[in-house]
Length: 605
Image (tube, rainbow, N blue to C red; front, side, top):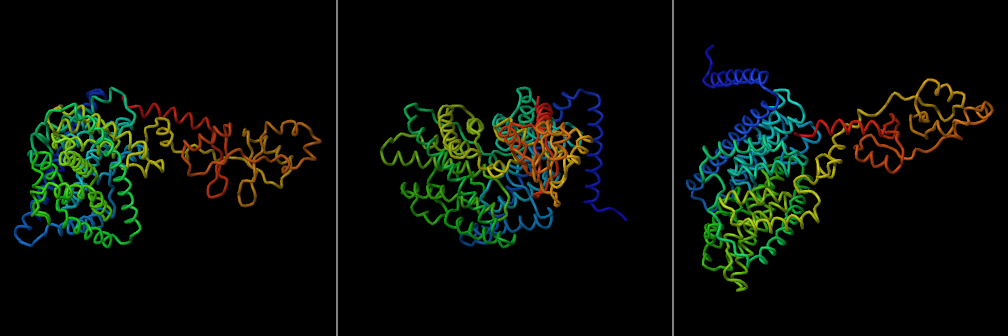
């Protein structure tokens, strides 16, 4: 039976992919491990950039198709209905094509590094592209950067798995994929490198910079060659910085910090509200309809929102009011100011509804949206009130983006260099540093973890900026529990205890009841005088020498929690309970030895 065109194409792609795979295995055997890593980071950079190109282009086509339908139907405000279609379609794809689940947010990358040995599912290499394109392209108020970073990380992780690389090389290539994704999305290689280091790799050596830089540069180059400028977020160089405006930038930094905190807490509240709702399609419909209402009143909430950011930054702010209910007030600056301010405040609700209802996307683009609107509001207000009539609204719009990005993701260096790179100049470096650092400091004061990883960090499922804790939470405690333990019953006598002592090297003997529940422990060093006296052995009961353990370890506790109990109890061996029943002992020395091994294996060089 002759094969169809699609079958022929699939066969052609598979055959050539296998050839390339075999070639790379041959190359790997001929060059040094370090040289293969350099080659790998280039290939991961190219793959991530191609994924960005496909995602951005596909989302752009979906967006253009939605605009075509809007023009064809000639229905007023039909744009506000497209997100309903996009979110429902996304939920349908997730349930019917992607086995009912999809990971969202950069927290999943950190969770893979901390808990899954840097292993990410293969489906993440394509699932993010499909779902986020429909969500954002059809008007969902979210960003594509989070799906981009997950896709890039999945490319790096699966490449490393395919060529049987070690954990630290797998993690390094995962970070290379993230860096290349951000670099390609914004044509900003430095920001890509810094994002990978600030957000993904909490601990890194200087030598690991080189592969990440190569990957980011590769991704940025491929993206710059293929993607059109209208798809990328870029601006003309900002106006000259006036040091007299430093007090106003300090105000912007303070406001950015508190707005970031409000954004994070509001978004989490919306997520929790949706978690209580049952039924995927019911949630999708509720969220999408509410989002449609918001977009009806505030059309700039449609999609990523980069077009409206460009309008504000390029000194054409009145065009923001086009196709809105306030379009008749374009020449009234106070109406414009109020509209932009309210839009800024409701953006988090639009993004929360988009993602909470089942759409796929991220908060990177929304943070830039909110930041640009905040910067505009601050500068415009100061100009209109006469406090300072010469403030550059464009500069404040650009710097505001860095403020919210820094406060929300706790990534000040990424924020500074991203805005510097997309404006093609460093005129605004000083205000960028001022606003980003102040916003970060305020946000960090009230929110220890960035909002994207807070829930996982609270559960100990991702790395933090505490190196020791990072290593400890990555230890699989269950493998360190000694379960081959001799025990006695509370009703036993010391003669029976002596028989147990003769057959074991344990320094602690657990005393259990009929249901295997721990009644206490017997410390051999405490009872040595007793067991050396035949008279006392005969006349002393087990009950008399039982002691309560200084601490109890629960089976699901992490290594950092266990080490804290060891420190508090000043002991080296503690009993472990699972569902109230004794299962064994855990040694402080075993944890420290595993910590040492992890330290060696996780040092990325």
